[in-house]
Length: 195
Image (tube, helix red, strand yellow):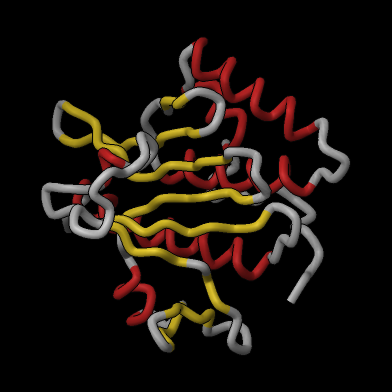
């Protein structure tokens, strides 16, 4: 099940990581740079590469300026009328796991045959039985959510938490997570541009 780490940072529109830093306030940019300095100092470059890849992807999908919570989490937003709404969070406590929170698009992912449900778990259709570590979240099963995700729950909003290991990177899991995030972004892009 262990496969080699992704070799390149892939982003959907080419702006990627530089765009993330450009959108961040001075305080948030400093927090991101400090976090990455620690990741870059690790013996293996896999952790920092994965963080940059996911941050760039989420930045491409959520166009408003990001906000950080300490050096551990980056929150991503879209416009919601004259306000903004959090749609993603990338959390890294440097414990060997990266966590991405995103809107609950699991039913859509199953209907589009990206994933299939098997024994209360989600399995990648593109691989033979590889499981994507997904945890459903809402007000009832997460009464005291972390700061990273609390604004993504409530008011009939549900989220999912996807956890990836930074030591055993699997490109198919990372690609599946990026596809889930793109499915979520399709929903608000359609709302912004009704035909």
